[in-house]
Image 1 (cartoon, rainbow, N blue to C red):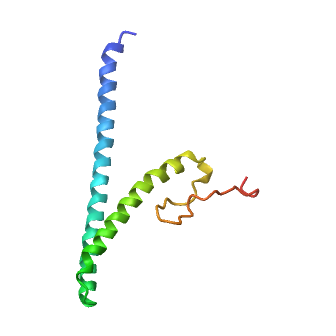
Image 2: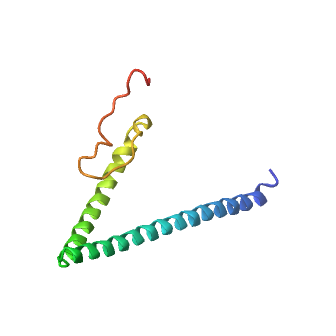
Image 3: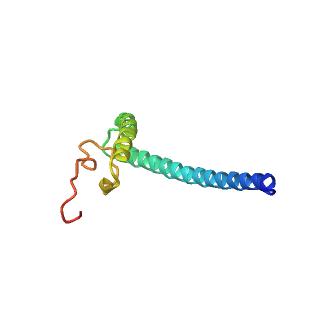
Length: 117
């Protein structure tokens, strides 16, 4: 194979470019998701500030934010556990969306019916 030595760097360069392109797209999507989440968080805080001022209890806003942060962190840690459960199941069980809320039914045992088999 006389062209093997010259072909290998070309293939490696092409693979590297494709991986870099994928990484750049992934980073862009992640940044857009973070931006949208941050925007929603700020809008929610402004809305809560407005509502707590209306009911004359502005001191409750920091507590509401603290509880929301704790719940979000709890949901994030539960989500990692749920992803592990989700990935361990056969693909036929992946019919419902992921959910990290208490009393979530998205990961209850589903038995395929005789009609779907």
